Structures are given as C-alpha cells and as structure tokens.
Image (cartoon, rainbow, N blue to C red; front, side, top):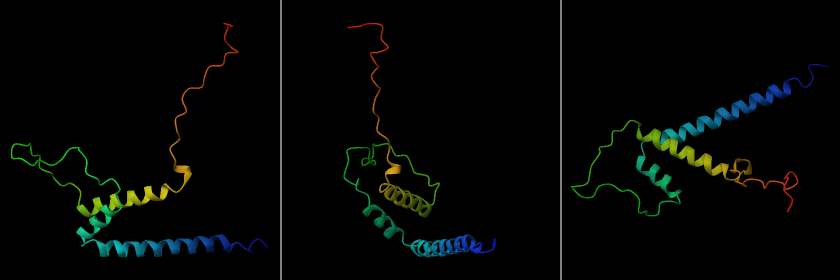
Length: 120
C-alpha cells in the first residue's frame, strides 16, 4: 500500500514545472518580439506612470552657458527598459496584498505611573 498515491505529488510537481516552462517560453517569445520596437515599449511603459506631471526639479541644459555632462551608456536600453517594467509590474501586484504593506510607526509607549516612586 506504500505505492498507492505516491505518484500524486511528483506528477503534480512535474505538471507545474511543465506549465511554468510553457509560460516562460511564451513570455520570452513576446519579449523577443518587442525587442526591435523601442519607441512603442517606452510609450507603453510611460502610459502606466502616474507621476509624469511636470515638476520644478532638475532639467536638461537649455542654454549654451549651462554645464553639459555627457551621458556614457553602460547598460543597453532594452535591459534598462526590461528592468523598469519588471519592477513596476512586481510593485503593482504587491499593492494588492496586505502582507507587503509597510507597518506604520506608532511612537513610544507611555511610561506606566505604577513604577514611579513619585505620587501626585
């Protein structure tokens, strides 16, 4: 009777592993299809960003007298886009689960007056 039901967990694990591989291949397929379309990828990425409102923060130089520091690319554009999109998707999904909420600060507990030698 030891062999009865013994294949259940290994079959379920194999099916889960196969499904994960299928999803991974499908994801990679669409990722490969999106690689040559840099403009559309970035447009799609910025459509989800609610903080694209103009700010009074730092900006690019607009006058000839402004200091210019050239940007040296060390990370390919596609890898950068992929990392940003993946981080956004993970953070978006995490907002639906309370276990990822940041605990709020409640302050110090008041000292109990029972232990105080002074009686008012």
